[in-house]
Image 1 (cartoon, one colour):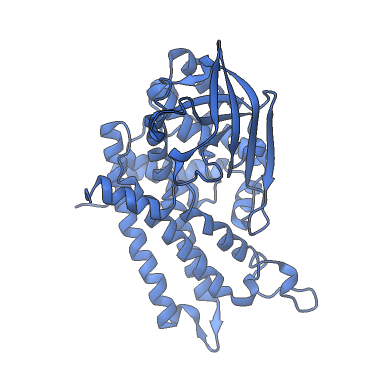
Image 2 (cartoon, rainbow, N blue to C red; image 1 turned 90 degrees about the vertical axis):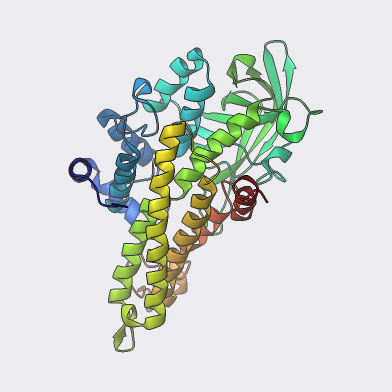
Length: 395
């Protein structure tokens, strides 16, 4: 197997690298490098720049505004963005809802919603998880009752990422309470300005406000906002999650994290020796790099398969598992390399109010704690292993 890029792919890589050097704003790259949450304005600014270039909706067909890239080009683009410290593209409208509407939406929904995702008029968030229905999503309780030309929605969603910035939410709701769990669910688009919706922040372990809980009380939504058929939303849910889990692999971000760990290990000393020369620490770095290289190949294989079939298959669960485990390992290695300088709060480690270690050392603990969530969201890694054993190993 030849894993090297073709001349055309290398030329594309240089094009992407050059464009990023000329167009990625320094204040955005610095914010990504420092870690922590980006402002809504920064994310919108970056999306607008990509949209003006035609590089925003990388998973969409050309006829809907996508760039028409091959799987390798998508991989190269993500890799170069991470290398340059560009922000992650907010996925909910672009990489989740967009493909769903292209596959299952009406022409009217496509014409109304897709352009507004591209130009930034609408910011979408995801209404899937609920208290008691996270990885076991089919247990969801939020229900929608038909009343003429409207659904009346009552219930609660949780872990709604970046919902504080959104003006729209796509939701899974139960429309047939008597059906089997997977057969009574529908996929509905909801305007967050609709009366009866309340969003409350959830603070994560590192102190950030990244996720929220959303409450629906007699929320009236037009039946025209139903995507696909009523009670057939589980098919759409699985389709969307397969796209989400491909993105969760985060190959480019792990490559970036690997280089950061190596750089730290070359600078940090334990006594007279560099940490990179410690055989145990070096072995952990080497194992993470080997696993990452294997995942890169797997990711490319699955991108090609998705291009041929129109959607990724259940094997995307492999990417979800390995991608999150590798990224968590790399964040743990960075935290261990910095030692007490990576304390979760700067005031905890000081010498006359001067921090030990690099200026952004304390952010490494926050990144480590924040990344503990990745093996849980998008379907916990335990659930992903169950999916693999049932669908691929037929056990």
